[in-house]
Structure formats: structure tokens, C-alpha cells
Length: 317
Image (cartoon, rainbow, N blue to C red; front, side, top):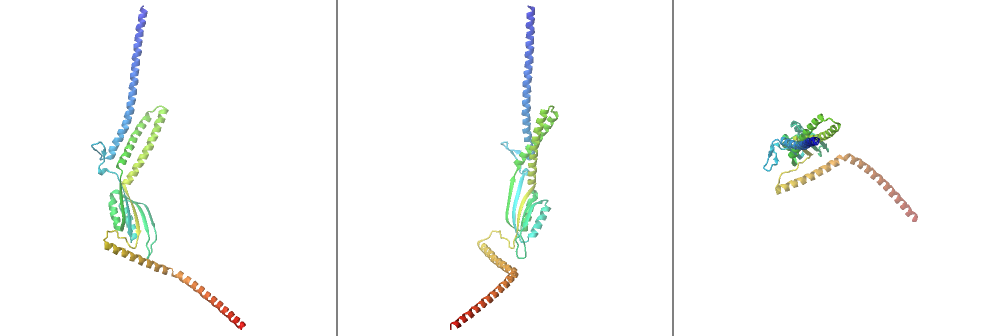
């Protein structure tokens, strides 16, 4: 009987011990799972928080409106300015020289240029096309100078506000930098090959994305810091009047233009004739020789035919 009681007591103690250990194990497992889930959530949250913080830093003077949307102050806006200009000038070489010198003085540079056409004492038909990069803070000064070099026939300016795009790119860049630091820290602590391979693969992807965003930022910085100016220059002997004219002024201008075109046409015709005079003389001599030979041949043949006709008439008589 005592043995049975002892056996029951031992069985009860063992059951309680097993149940207690099992409960602690389950609690520990659940706690570990919750901690892992929390770590994942914290990691994700940290990623977004970093991106948000980076956005605020990139925005500089960003303020939050009543609806919670961030707005960027005017002084912190990222603007890309492009200008197109077309000029007419009688002093083609002087304009090119002065414009190039002004670009250097303002700290800009010539990105692309081309000149074509010909010029002489009686004809001017040269043209030039330039793509210039001018520091943004010196753009207005440069445009004012260029407009004084010739007659402006066309002007267009466009402004592209890339502030939000810039902030977004910079935010992603800083978030990726944070993730890269975390991955490097995990890589130092990794012990098995599988974890090392997984971390290195992710690290490679992060570095690739990071380089892409850095490239975008460099491109945007260049476009923001240096405005692009496209200039087309035409050499003319008579500039076009681009001012607003009244009825009689416009009639007089049209009449003057017509007279100018006629005179230039006559001038061109006279120049063409005089310029071709040596060729005309040669062809004149050749034509004269041909005419003389033809006349001799025709005269000789006519004389022979007349002689034959006279002989025939005599024979008939």
C-alpha cells in the first residue's frame, strides 16, 4: 500500500515538473517569436523612419502643412533652368569671341559648338550653334550680356522644379546607407556560410541601388548648379526688326525689304556675270569660231550650188 502511495506521489511530482517545464518552454518560444517579429517590425520601421528623417534633412527648410504634407520653402527649391536664344548679327566673329569670353568669365563652359557656312565681301551666310553651361546664379547676367551682342529674334526659358524628386532620391540613398551599415554589422557577426551568403547577396543589391541613386543625385546637382543655354547665331547683312510697328511703319518696312531684296538680286546677278566673265569670254571665242566656220562652209556650199545651177542652165540652152 505504501509503495502504491509513494508511486502516485512520485508520478504527481513528475507530471507537475514536466508540465512546468513544458509551460516555460512554450512561453519562452512564444516570447522569442514575438521578439523576432518585433525586431522585423522595428527593422522595417527603422528603414522607413530613416527615409523620413533623410527626407526632412534633404528638404532643409521643409515645413509641414495642416494636412500633414511636407512643403519645401522657396529658398530650398531645386530648379533646372534651360534657355533658348536665336540671334542675328552683322559682326559674326566678334559676337562669337565676346560670348565665349563671357562664358569663361562667369565660370561656365562650352559643352558643344558648331559653325558652318561661308563669308565674303559680297555674301554672308555663316551660322553657329552653341550649347553652353552657365552657373545658375550667373544665368540672368549672362542672358543680359548676350542680348546686347545681336538682334534677338527668339527667346524661350523653361524651369523644371525637381525638388520633390531630389528629396525622394536623397531619402532612398540615406535609407540604403543605413541598411548597408546594418548588413555590414550582421556580416561581422555571422558564423555559418548560409547566413554569410544571404547577407552578401543583399549587400550587393543594396550597393547597386545605392550607386544608382548616387548617380541620379550627381546628375541632378549638375543640372541644378549649371543652367543650359542653347544659342543659335546667324550672320546677316540686314537685321530683322522685331519691334511692334504701326500700319504705315509696317508698310514702309515691307516696301524697304522688297527694295532691298530686288537690289540684292541685281547685285548678285551683276556679281555672277562679272565673276563668270573669263568663262564667258572663252565660250564667246569658241562660239565665234564655230559661227565663222559655219558661215564659210555655208557660203562655199551655196557658191558651189549656184555654179552648178548656172552650168545646168547653159547646157539646157
